[in-house]
Image 1 (spheres, rainbow, N blue to C red):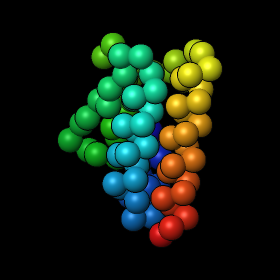
Image 2 (image 1 turned 135 degrees about the vertical axis):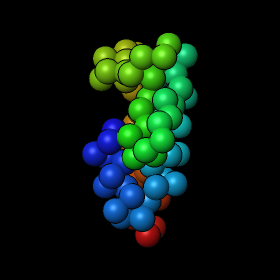
Image 3 (image 1 turned 90 degrees about the vertical axis):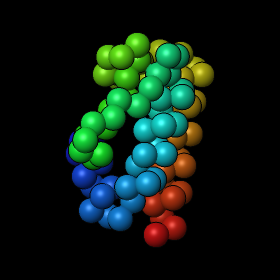
Image 4 (image 1 turned 90 degrees about the horizontal axis):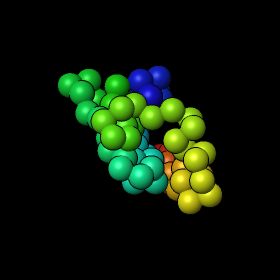
Length: 80
């Protein structure tokens, strides 16, 4: 997520990036945003461990949450 966070910051979208991470975390059971001092390096975690792609495609509900998070981020980004 560091690359995505840096890209979002460069494009003036840091708040949208944070909302994207929050949406991802909500779509994963026991998910959370693992925050660091460097906001562009925030990660999505499950049970305190950084998630892998497997967590995002685990079931239909999680995949739908991931797709919704992407769509919301894209919509916010294109409004800029």
